[in-house]
Image (tube, rainbow, N blue to C red; front, side):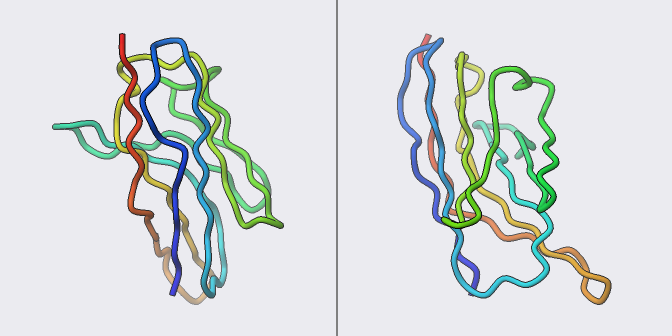
Length: 120
């Protein structure tokens, strides 16, 4: 069973930094990408950043230049370095893992979420 465990959330002042970590475990076949999504109160979950198995990254426009996604395959961990945080970055951040192959449709797995709160 695939498990994703996030850590690193917390309370920070505007302009500060946080680094989120997500460790994966379990049998995983045909991994295609990992990433981070977030959901603020009353809003839909939105993409923050993703990284493919080839190392290609994608960011939401709202975080470009401030956030950086990276991975450590040996540690089975994906990171999200968040700098210059703004109050509007306040949300629950979820780790995501996607799998797909020629024979199976895409399947997404989610972590339990970690709260990030940015005070003004």
